[in-house]
Length: 128
Image 1 (cartoon, helix red, strand yellow):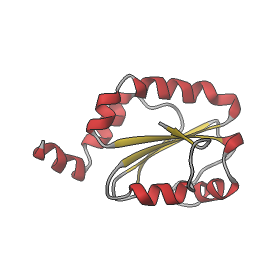
Image 2 (image 1 turned 180 degrees about the horizontal axis):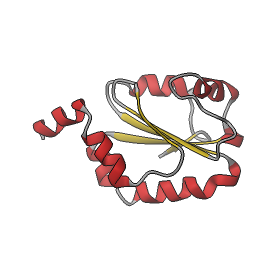
Image 3 (image 1 turned 180 degrees about the vertical axis):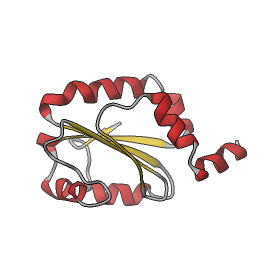
């Protein structure tokens, strides 16, 4: 899992680099909602093998440490970040498109179900 404190590139550049190769789960949280980020990260950490099987990377963004260009990028479509929200998340497909947006931690079963229903993931599963 990556966080904005460890990102060496802009979020836009990082997502462009992952396009066509990796799915990305972007998690955003305000300082007063860090418990939600921790809850989500713990649930995902327990499913590391499932994340790897689905080529899923996780990026955690803390509002107080988010560079302004990244904040502006997330406020645009298709993300539509509302900076006053305590928690937001976006599932981004390998094609670079936002597949699902959520405002509270997502259950891993629901997350994996969303990914497994994607056409590209279905093709990958057939090849495994």
